[in-house]
Image (tube, rainbow, N blue to C red):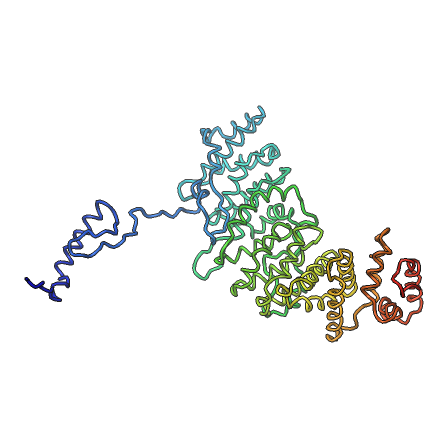
Length: 543
C-alpha cells in the first residue's frame, strides 16, 4: 500500500507570484459580477467584500434643499426641520418676462385674478436662484414688494409664503439690505393673514437650530437674530405665550456660571396663548417631535424648545425626554435652562401639565445628585408652586408615591414636601390637607392607618428640620371645611375624620384640630361644629 505523501510546509505557503495572480483573477471576477464572498481564485484565498460604491453622493448647496431632501428619512441626530423648494412648482406654468412683469401683475389685480398673481410672484422668486448663486432683479423685487404691501390680504397662497421663507432661510450670503427687504416683505405678508401657516414655525425652528460652520464654532442663525426680524419672530412666538425666567432665579440655583442666555427675551411675546394658531403649528410639531431621538443632539435644539415652552404639548414632550437628557453631562447647562422655563410655564389646570409634574417628581434621584441639575430643579418646583393649582398637583403626586408600593417610593418625597412647606407654608399645608381628605373619602383599605403613619413621620421630620412648627391650625381647618362641604354625607365622613384623628381623649383631638392654640374661641367654635353632628358621632365622642 502506497503511503500518503505529506505536504511540505513550503508547499502550503503562497509565493508572491501566486498572490499576484490571485489578485488579478479577483479583479476580473469583481468587474463582472460585483463583490462576492465565494472563492474566486485557485490559490484558496476568498475575495474580500467590497463595500465601495461607484457613485459618489453630491452634497447640495444651501439653495438646493429640494423635494428630494424633504423626502429623506432623518436620523436621530438630524432634527433640523427641512425648508424645501417644492414651492417652485407653483410658478412653473408662468413664462416670466421682466419687461412686462409689472404690467401683467397690474392687469391680473384689476381682473381679481389673485391666484395668477401669486403664481407670477412665485415665478419671480424662482428666477432669483441661478445655480448656487442668488441674482436678484431689482425691478422684479420692487414689484413684488409693492404687490404684497397693497394686496397681501388676498395673497393667502401657501406656496408664496413658503417661497419667501425659503429665501430668508438660505440668506447667509445675502447682502444685508437685500435680506432686510425680503424680511420686510415676509413680515408685511404675514401681518395681513388671519392665521399663519405651519411653514412659519418650520422656518423659525430651521433657523433657531442653525448650522454649524466648522469644528468648535457656534451654530449660526440666518435671520431670527437680526434686529429687523423681531416683528416677524414675535408674530411666530406670540401664540405660545411663553413665560421666561427672571434674573433672580439664576443666582438661586447656586450653580456657578449659570446666567440668563442671550436668546431669552426680557419680556413675554404675549400674555395669552392662541389655541387656534397653536393647533395649526401642532400639525408640524407632532411629527417633528418623533424625529428627536437618541443622545446626539445639537445644543441649539434646547434653545428652540425653551422658546416654545408656553405650549403644553411642548412641555409634555420635554418632560418625556428629560430622563435621558439629564444623564448627559454636556447638556447640563441647557437642561438647567429648560427646567427653569418649565417651572415658569406649568399650569396644572391642563391635564398634560399634571402629567408633566408627575414625570418631573419621578425623575431618577441618582440623576439629581449633581448640583448643576438639583439646584435648577428645586428652583423650578418652587416657581411652579407659586400657583395654587400646581401646589395641589405636586402634593397629590408626592403623597400618592409615598403611600404607594415601597419598591416604587422615592427618597426625595419628604425633602420636596419640606421645601414647599417652608417656602409656601399656607398653600402647601392646605394642599396637603385636601389630598389627605380625598384619600379618606375614597375609603381605601388601610387608608386611615397609612395616612396616620405618613403624617406622623412627616410632622416629626419637619420639626427636626428647624423650619418652624407644623401649621396644625391651617391643616385642621382646611380638612374640616372640606368634610363639611360634602353636604348630605357630613355625619358619615365626620366619623371617619374622628377615627383618623382619634387619640386618647377628645380634648387632645380638639387641641390638635385647633393647632395647639391657646385661643379659647377657636376651641369653642370647633366644638360647636362637632356638636351639631354629635348625634351620629362615634360613642364616647359626643359633646
